[in-house]
Length: 80
Image (tube, rainbow, N blue to C red; front, side):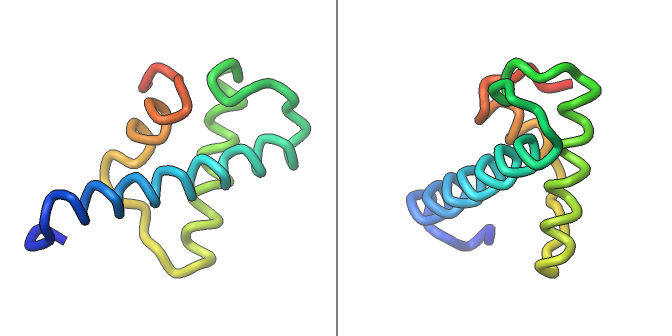
């Protein structure tokens, strides 16, 4: 990834963030949380992150370093 042009890397990173945000929203709904992702309690947010990580692993993807903070910022949360 480091050899990619910045514009493509930015597009790819934004695509991943959108995919993770959609996965997080689906996880929150499946867990019975009706609030927006940014309004979830810390405990519920951790449950959502665990679910998103499991979905990544089921697809054969290893969550990259910093993904939790990037996703939190993307959905309007403070990074823990």
